[in-house]
Every structure is written in structure tokens, then in C-alpha cells.
Length: 221
Image (cartoon, rainbow, N blue to C red; front, side, top):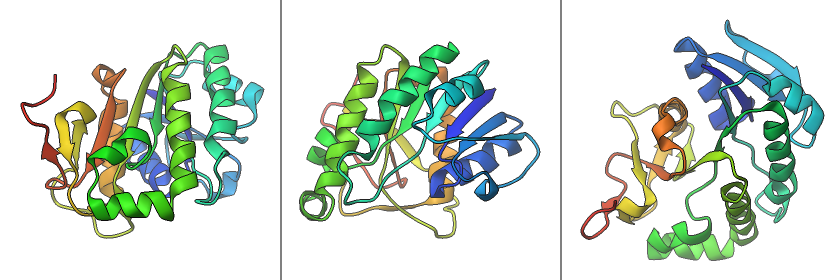
């Protein structure tokens, strides 16, 4: 599979790139700082930023999917809303139909499934950041592309879990208790599973620890 990655220098994107190439996928890392992209067999590095529609469209030609794993400062309430429409335009110009967006748990209606403590954090320290993420999610859903949006819980650079992360459709999740923390390596592994599964198109998916979720009453469909 040929995968274009925006955010290949980030915490999740860099790990995703490493894991994708280890699984024999071809990765095009579209990065503002090419020198910061992990060098490995199977990675093609193209310089550019999310605002560069024409260069991104050129880099994405022939790709099976584009993965967007970029984020701004927590104080920036417009970062994704300014950039994602340009990315979507580039993806369409390239003739690519599928885009996977890494959002964050707590954005938009996902916060309704959070614990009381988490909701307090989301409303105060992360209000602008999460509003921007939620707005970008809606932009993608209205794009006409074959989209998938993933919502990782709190991420940390810690030793990977021996168990795989839980990946659940949001309509199957009733509650995310407490403040679950997931190692970034596990989040990247889960993201790769999502990206390489075409059946996830049109789905919003929670990525959390194996025990960091509770099912919705009666289950989801």
C-alpha cells in the first residue's frame, strides 16, 4: 500500500511511518522539516506543509490513502480549520479517495463519553484546541471523500503495552472512564490497522487502552 503521511515528524506520525515501512508499505512523508523524518527503507520524503496544495497533490498521486496526523498548539483555535480544507483539495486533485484523520478524544460529541474529570479538563485547558479539532472533523465528513476519523485518548511516550490497543466504533462506546493513557507506539500500531482496513471508511473510531472503555447499553450497530 502507498501511504502519504502528513505529520511524519510528530509523536504518532513518526512511529506510524516506522511501523508502516516495517510492514512493507510504501510511505511518502510530506514534511515541513525533511531532516526530522526518520530515514528508513520504503520512505520517500517530500518537503512541504499542509498549506501547500499543489506540491501535496503532486506527492499524493498514485497513493492509496492519505493520513493526516498534524496538530497545532493547544492555544490555537484555528490550526486544523485553516489547513484541512487545503489538504482535502490536494487529495482530490491527486485523485485519491481515502483520507484518515487523527483527531483526539474529547473533541466535539466524543466528550459526552468522557468522565467528569476529563470533561473538566476539556472545557478549561483544552477548550479552543478541541473546538478546532471538532470543526475539522466536520469539514472532513462533509468532504465527499472516503474518510475515517480516529480519536486517541491521552498519549504518552512510555513502554508499549504487550496487548494491542482497543479500537472501537464510537457508537459502540458508552463511556471512557477516568483518564486512560495509551503509549504512542500502541496508538501508531492501531492507526496502521485502521489505515490498512478499507472497511473503516466512514467510521469514527476510539483508540484507547484495552480496558479504557465501556460498551454502550445494548451495543452499537
